[in-house]
Image (cartoon, rainbow, N blue to C red; front, side):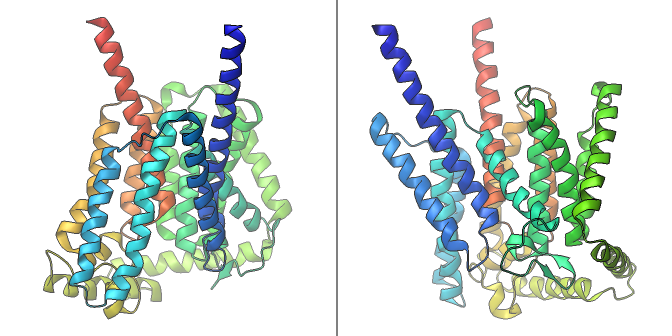
Length: 410
């Protein structure tokens, strides 16, 4: 009788785990699929559904304990300081508007980390990223036709309405597939899919014509290779997958669009090289240079505390396209250090992991995000921050495992 009860309890526990895992996966995917202003309400509804599911299951299990990881505490301190900046902000409304985003991220950090630790379903973060990326891959292959524009000035903007955001998401997608491929549990068609996803994600990055991502994606893939694990079978499989992917691209891609794309990529890279060599550069490079120069002038007038969260827009009309500069202007040196402490905390955790491919991918992804921060604003970008939370959780899990082994050997 006792065995029957135990089996029944285990089945119920597994059902709860599947439910919360499914909701979390869909929520993470929704951050990518429903990012546009007219669709963000769906993302907010799914966020509330995640909270409600977590609360209901916690009540059913009578487990009300919330986990407070270091990374969440660090981000909360950054949020508090960012809120404080509303008192000295040039424009209160601009600062307060973005503070609500930080508060939402903080709450999500705590609840998602608690879910990961309680139910051991950390890979749901990666599944959600893959699902959101797949939606944009299908748009890029002209298989799905949403009721909004997915190209702007010849650059793919997808469901995020911004080419650089899509490029950044596809880098996260490549990371998710690399990590999943390193797991023994990833087998069969799902393994094949992850190989194809890496190639198709890079294709979408090319559609965005994002210079940084076009450089970083191959670098990311190249750094992931291990000569020790290079086998003839894997090389043959990879060549076959490339062939299959090319066949998919030829079948579903717009050839005329691809011809225009090659011209635009060449033009943008020529502009970047001209800017480096001091010859002026293209419009995009000139704008970035202007924002950088003007941004540092604003920062120099209030370097310690900043002029208020998101208040760079007050003077520059737009955001700075640079996370470091955006934070330095808005919350000064103090706020910038508080924000990047979440990276320092995570890097320390990853450093303590035993050598493995997963550890290598974690370091590569953190480096890629930090490099992208020179071209994008990420201090409130949930997919990026939740990826960092995933890395932190897995690294901490490995650290705890090592400590247990060390204690047993004593």
